[in-house]
Length: 195
Image (cartoon, rainbow, N blue to C red; front, side, top):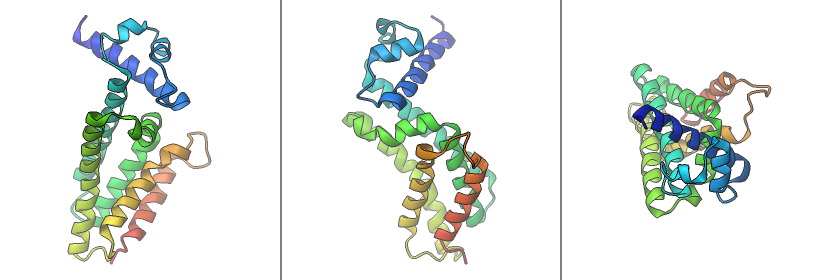
């Protein structure tokens, strides 16, 4: 099997797992469910992943890497002002959690289902993501652009606020993803108390 074909089959498996885990949760999803959703046999899944645990870990790592890439890119394009950087980060974070809603929902709800090695990997990537926000907010405080006395709490609140969008937002709802991103930029900016 070619590298491209292997990658395509792996993605089919991951996509099926994400759909199933959104419907049934990790523990309610069987390898048979994943196989059926990918139009494969259970045995063929094991050629690509050792276990359901490996599939979950890959879903979460892939989602975090993609979110990290989106936020890092937004930060690099935003300019040097902390307020602009924070708004770019928040916008990218919210857009990830709306455009990749199903992946994000698995990431938001199934961390508890990871085994210890997978948990460590995912938490390390999650911490890297948090550090991007923390660096911008702490620098903003140091430079006098933000006046919050609680920069670390602001970071956690902003990240959690954006992450939870995947739980309740719907594409056919009253607010577009862009509307939510705009509102959350305003809320995040207010939270850090701009000078």
